[in-house]
Amino acid sequence: MAATHAEESATDFGRNVYRNKGGPHGLGDPDDKTLRRVEIEVTIPKKMRDIARQEKCTKEVEDFTNCCKESSLAMVIKCRPFNTALWDCLGRWYNDKEFRELCTQKYLEERSEYRRTGLTKKQRNRLGTTGF
Image 1 (cartoon, helix red, strand yellow):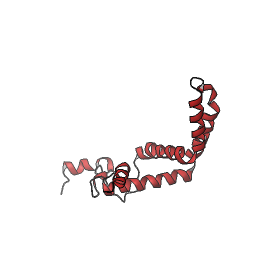
Image 2 (cartoon, one colour):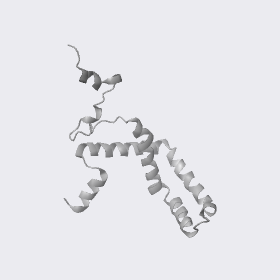
Image 3 (cartoon, helix red, strand yellow):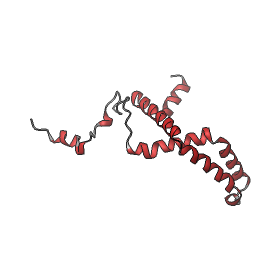
Image 4 (cartoon, rainbow, N blue to C red):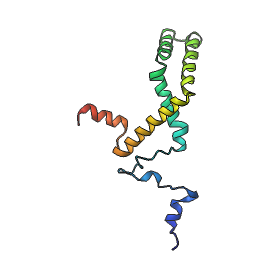
């Protein structure tokens, strides 16, 4: 039997364009561990920067922030060593393969939870604090 036009267009170029339409809330399969290109190139590196800035390089961030607050217009010159130290720390974590894998797993867990519940991490935190 011949495939309909809708069936043919659903698998254009050998890929399933309805891949992210399954799951309990129509947001994709919660157990799917494949990553899209934008997740690999944008979302996970952003998560890595955020975690490195908040958890790994806290001293460097604090030193740079204090320097910037203390020296208004001269901060470009005065805070250069602190900025270099901050970028070195962030770069060290950004190039760490184990850290990238850890951030990827955290992202996959968050995405899976979102697909399972239909709630973002921010929405879950808000609901958790209100007691509903």
